[in-house]
Image (cartoon, rainbow over all chains, first blue to last red; front, side, top):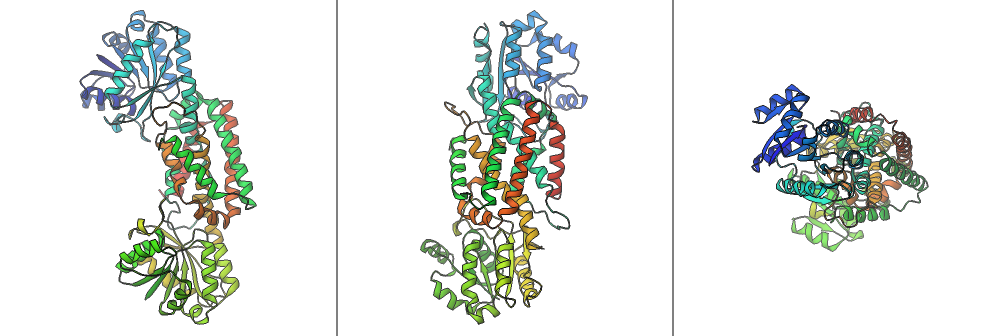
Length: 285
Length: 285
């Protein structure tokens, strides 16, 4: 099976390294000359020109989109214009939200072997330079199927299962809407609160302190603000209702707790106890 | 210098291990027979009986309170009843809030060598079994002085500086009220939000998932809910106004952001950028 990875940043290049190690033939595309040079130094064939990419794609069996959701839609528009590409390729993305992309695909064609994929892996840093062939080892990858009338969704699923399992991931098939809602609860909303905490605590009375007042709690709870704001823009915009809902609920919980604490009515031990129970449930402990 | 550590849990026992290693004579007190047995196994002399503790204390130069704030006040009440103990011992605590304890000491005596100490170190686990002689290495320890009319505050400061520097900590002298406000911003409030996040995300649609949906963001942002709720009760109650204020502000920020996201008006890249700047400021990066 020959695999083309369009977008070889951290996620795409990590997948490329591992798939090549597993014996697959892998090439890809990037936008910058710097990334191209770096990946060629790693022995990959890499393209940057849009026309050329669409031309060489006919020699591949699988197209992996290592792009953000807006770029994915743009790339798919181009691929769908070419009937032979559209019907032969198995295509999957790696975006953090799934409904918007699946809705787009379903609205365009019932005859394309597309499947949504969301590997639960990443780093704060970006780019092929920080790629890691073990990035997906033991990580969950969510797979979301096209609509029931799609004639090729079983073929797309079977290819995606094979490839993700070969790179060490645990595959979970899930409905796109449920996936996005779940992500708002366990990841997307959290990134935003992390930013709000970092900003608010940046207003702390720091002047004149010779050492940082930050301990482990601050460090860990704000670690993810180092992520790319541009990447998160597309994620949040494509999942805005569930994220906004989660954030509003948290705001109400925080307001209620603040009022209880102000008047020393809060049951702090019960709060920690129920939080730990909920955490164990989410972490499958 | 002979040191008595009243309360040899994680914090007290870690200090005991390191001070002994540095050549000081160290003994202490605990409540449970289990802890006593464990610490005796480590070669410490350990008392459990209240009367005996007060009797042997006259043989020591320094009393370290490894207790929560309510227990500290109780212990100090007992010490202050004995004039010779009160005037000879240098005393410091290790609590996470300082104003309440300093106010108590100032109201009781102007002739006691007491200083507030808050080492910024800890673990989620409790007890002498998880003590670590390197716990305070390179950590900040805040020292808060008694009121200006206290005749012994310089003596207390000089002893505390010597001991904390010997265990590898970086000492920062700070006003108690400013300390407590700072802690609400960089630690106390964060622990509560961590609980709220863990609880709220525990409501995620988890049924039937064969793998946990939690990635690094969830794991890191909810790690601290494993802390002791009983310990946090006394911390939050002794710092309720600043904590409640911080939490209310966060609630308002979250509500505003939720509304912006709902209508796709949020500037996510700017949010991440300003969060990172604030984080670097707090972390002294």
